[in-house]
Structures are given as C-alpha cells and as structure tokens.
Image (tube, rainbow, N blue to C red; front, side, top):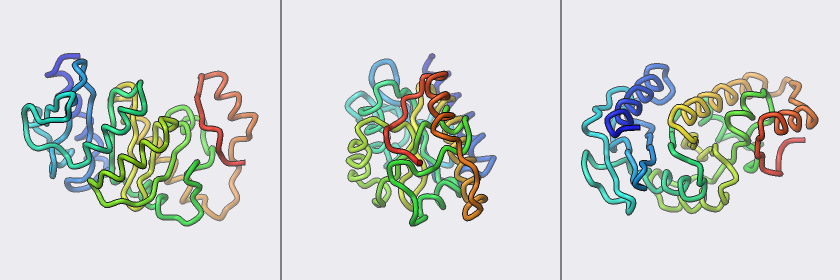
Amino acid sequence: MSDAKIREEICRLGRSLFERGLTPGSSGNISVKLDDGGYMVTPTNASLGFLDPARLSRLGADGRLISGDAPTKEVPLHSALYQTRGDARAVVHLHSTHSMALSMLPEIDPRAALPPLTPYYLMRCGQTALVPYHRPGDPAVADAIKGLAGKYTSVLLANHGPVVSGDTLEAAVFAIEELEETAKLYLLLRGLNPRYLTPAQVADLSKTFGLALPEHGHD
C-alpha cells in the first residue's frame, strides 16, 4: 500500500471511529507499520475525527520523527505490541466507554478479561488481557505489554481503554469494535447468569478458524 493510501486509510477509519462515539475529543491513536520498519502514527492531541493526512507523524524504524506533527505520546505502547506480535501491521487504541468501564470492574480476570460470549469476539479478539493502570505515555505501559509475551492481540489498559493489534488496519479496527460491543454485552448481562460458549464450542471455533488462544480462560 502506498504512503498516500495509508494516510487516507488512517484518516478514513479514524473519522469513522470518532463519528460513532468510540473515542471522544482528542483521545485515541492509530499506527500502521511501514515496509521500511518505520511507522505512520496519529499526532498528539489530534482528534481522530479531524485528521489531516499531510500532518500524520512519520517515524523511522528507530522511532524518530521524520515528518509531520509530533506523534502521540503512546508510541511506546504501540511499539511494544509490534515488538511482541510479529504479525502486527497496525495498532488502534481508543477510550471507548464500555471497554473502559470493563477495565475498572473488580472481578475481571487479567488473563481473560471477558468470557466467551460470542464466536466473533473470539474470532476477532481471541482473549483480552488486562494490565494494571499506568499514566498515559508512561514507559511502564510498554513494559506491561511486553510482559504478555505476544500472547494477546487485544489488551485493556486499566482505567484507560483498549488497545488492539491486527495484520491490517481494517482488521485492528474491526477487532476493537468487536471488543467494545462484547464489553457492552458483558455489562448488560452482568449479574444475570448468561450462557457462555462451552469449552467444546470454543474448541470447535479454535479448530475451524485456527485461533491461537492463551491457555488461561473462563471455565
């Protein structure tokens, strides 16, 4: 994909996420890994709804700014996912309401933040890890991501929001949307004793679609 096309795609999908209320104000950030090992990243304090393709931050493989505005302070978070997920070509981080609410609940298992509610949650997100709170931009967030050893494509940052990697930007966007909808379902069903997918059903999905799920999960 050309440089211009990548810029257009980031702006198009960023606007879509913003217009549907999935990340308010100037929150959230997007990155795409480039063929030369560098990254195209949304700038700091930029609304995903009003991105300018020409002002996106172009970073080299060493993380230094080559062109465009100063990048989001969450670059270490994105870099950690790229370093630990070899197939990752894009990362999306949002401040979506239901995922953020989920990250604050005391009963959440950090190894599997959501139960297997739907097949598409498992197919798009796998399982979701929860990492402890760190202030935005803190390098410790990257260390927490690295501590997951590449087992998760979707992660909740406690009291902060979700971050998801994908093999394309579109795949990462679809996955973070699925995560948000599943978090919403969980909150709607909380305390109602809903039926989850059974271990046999999860195993069937894993076999059919080649899902690589971490060992730890809900019973």
